[in-house]
Image (cartoon, rainbow, N blue to C red):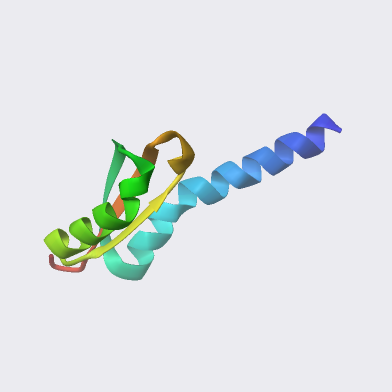
Length: 78
């Protein structure tokens, strides 16, 4: 049934859109970026961003195509 498929799709999009919102509640301010890179470099990129910003960094989205939503979560006052 197409109604159930649409409801499922809407639920998935809601979760995806709420990731940054949830991060703000947990830590403070979120800097959100959409970046393209070689997916094999994700571990070193993640380490680099965490060291440079001294903040929590998370990625989500469509990493399989070399594009990722990256959120740098800054603590209050930073």
